[in-house]
Length: 216
Image 1: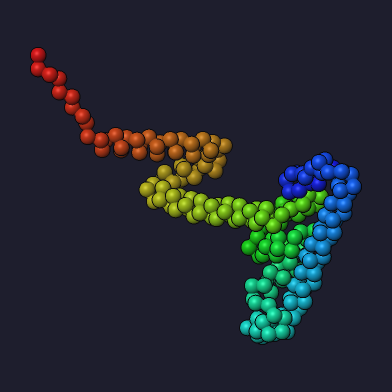
Image 2: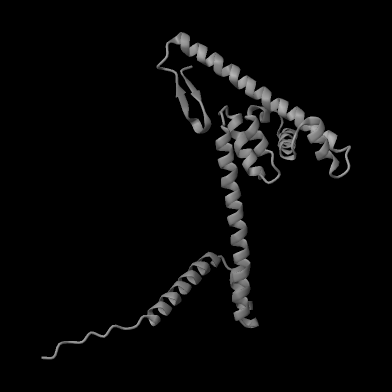
């Protein structure tokens, strides 16, 4: 094997090395990857122990125990518990992730779609990096925020339109949108009408320029 597959299909070319050096580099890569896998598996064990210990403490006492006994600040303890939760849901594939990537991916704020996207690459045999996992999480969180914003604006605009219509026209609008397959065309026409009105308004505000012809 002369190439090693990385995230997204990127490969490292061993062709520039002699067969002996190439073989040794591949052996060393195997040692490193196995060690990294053990780190993540150890993280699962630590996280599971923290989760079990937490059940025995009253509110607030667990974090004190973590600091004084385990030597963990709250953030570090939570990251280990993230890995354990991720392992409980998705099994041994989690151990093929870098520990930091698994800690980030196991956060409760990360969507299931993001988790499945990352683990699908792992199952295909691709090496995923911590930075790629972080970027994937940020990308999907950004999309979720935009969707929530769009939904809020949609509700606001719908309320504004219906307030301007009487009951009869509200019924006509409701029937048109629910019973006909032309709702998408209606949205396009609405956008065009709005744009046309804005253009007319801007044109009306422009002071006309009167050209004076020279006297003959």
